[in-house]
Amino acid sequence: MRTSPNRLIATIFGAVYLLVGVLGFFVTSGIGFFATEGANLIIFAVNPLHNIIHLAIGAALLYAGMNGVTLSKSVNTAVGGVYLLVGILGLFLVGSSLNIIALNGADNVLHLASAVVLLGVALSQDKAAVASARA
Image (cartoon, rainbow, N blue to C red; front, top):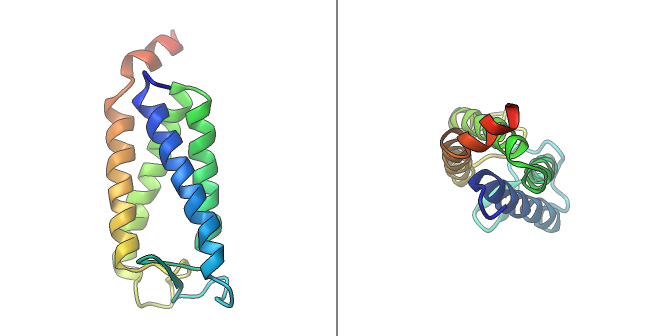
């Protein structure tokens, strides 16, 4: 893991998103599962659905980070792409009835920043390791 930026990023992001998912349940008591206005976890709005999504993404990233460069690179790319989409869509969803994961401005910034890091590492690092794994 020390020699693979993809494994390192996947492991760190996975652990952080798992932690955020768990902590989110401490602040969402009484919040509807699909509530468009969530409870604040620091400055980020969350509802139970948002917490479950964080747990799933965190688990996928952590699993990938613990299981190899090729898998880490693939999961970082996939999660980064999804976060890029969520970050962009979130700009239009805040304040609407379609905002079923209770996004706010801080969430959008975090999702876009996560996308930049995950995609940046996935698309620029570990090219030789993945090429040799395919050979």
